[in-house]
Length: 111
Image 1: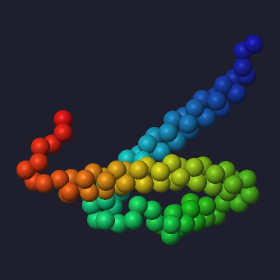
Image 2 (image 1 turned 45 degrees about the vertical axis):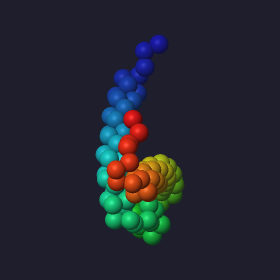
Image 3 (image 1 turned 60 degrees about the vertical axis):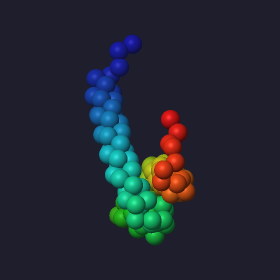
């Protein structure tokens, strides 16, 4: 059975939005990784709960009802995934720095 032409058009629109959402999330992740490197270098905390709250309020401002709940769920999932990335990257870099700082200057490195 061939789908209704309008249904096919709407599905293509959804597919385009899915692609745009994927690209937006990947672009955000790239910036978040840069932030993690900066926070490590500057010895700043990996997570800033006030910043997360402010971002959430800004994203949800003006939304009501079902739209607000859906956008909040998507935003919260993206922020949680990015938070995990930041914490992991900052933790890993700090451990590497600590280990490197304990090694004597003339000590051989492992290969």
